[in-house]
Length: 179
Image (cartoon, rainbow, N blue to C red; front, side):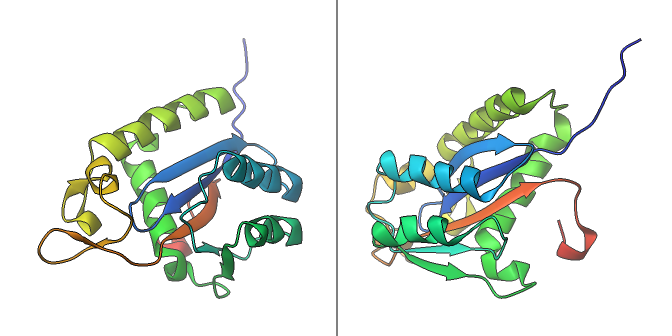
């Protein structure tokens, strides 16, 4: 009889606040500073940082000075959230809650590669089909056809600064953080 071992996987993702576009960079069982920095390099190499003005990230020790320096060389201002303030990174926290409640609570994940495939499929749905209240119930793809910015009351987009919000997720839910 084969025994089942459960393990925690951590997901690294970036979310563009103005358009709600999500970039899932990967999952790992053992995230460290080198892995996180390499994933950020991959994001920069794919030229996904061209319109980004600042990065809001939490204060995890994995985000070392090479991680921050990579964004500074791309002329992205790095802002750390206040200590023990999950509401400061509300867009990322909300995405974590959404992906858990709409996807991961219904799927038994068999490993890292399976998690990568499931998240890729969910992010495709999140981008192409799911309406977003912050975008006046438009889909993300409809909002990205306009220039980056925020929706005004008339249903058009006004230009504002764009940002990428970042967090990693994984492990058991923390009841103190409301997720």
